Amino acid sequence: MKKLLLPFFAALLCFAIACNNTPESEDTDTPETEMESDTESSEEESQPASSDSDAAYEVKTIDPAPKSPRMEMSGKIGGVEITVNYGSPKVKGRKIWGGLEKYNEVWRAGANEATTIDIAADINVQGQALPAGKYSFFLIPAEEGAWTAIFNTVAEQWGAYEYKAENDQIRVETTPNFVEETQESLEYSIEGNNLVLSWGKARIPLSIAAK
Image (cartoon, rainbow, N blue to C red; front, side, top):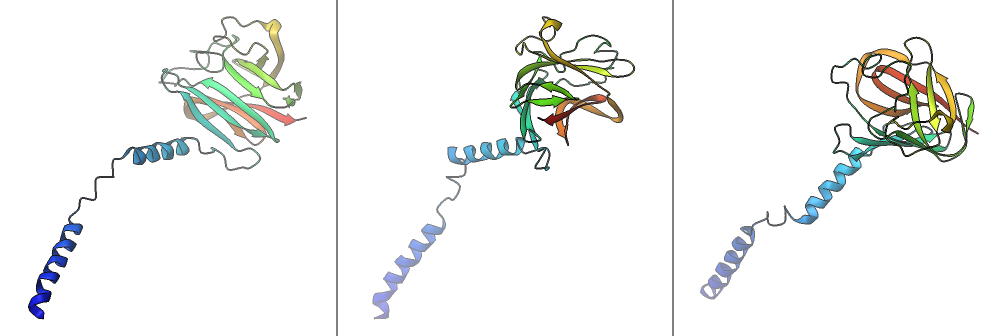
């Protein structure tokens, strides 16, 4: 009987060894695996930059190709959705205020195409009424005192080259905060009830309230 069973057990042992030696790496580089990796990266890039549920926002890259990538910041203040589309230049060791960006001149508040701000509902900015809509956004830096922030009704324009004051919806004044730490890449953020532009050593806040 033992002699009859020996060939059976030998065949079973060979089969088990063959199964254990089957390559396990055939599926590690499948398209499905690569797609899952890309999805995870995208989710990381679009994570909220603020954990405050009333003022949470996220920033994502719209076009990484230009030297000043096109970015989009979106979030809520007082329940109102606000989206800022802007080019994000870097400091690169340059003097920004009073140097690259001249005092008392209209500046696009970003790079390349004019910065746009899309507001989902009527709000007050620095106490002034601003109807819901999409606006181009400009700043006039000042060497001393308050800066001027401009919401212009012509949303799509290149820089400030065709800017016309007659198309302004509102102009408001804001006082920048200057800090020691340099913000290398221009960015927009939401901090409490403020929409804040940060670049170089300046932090320019705009107080926003839902109507």
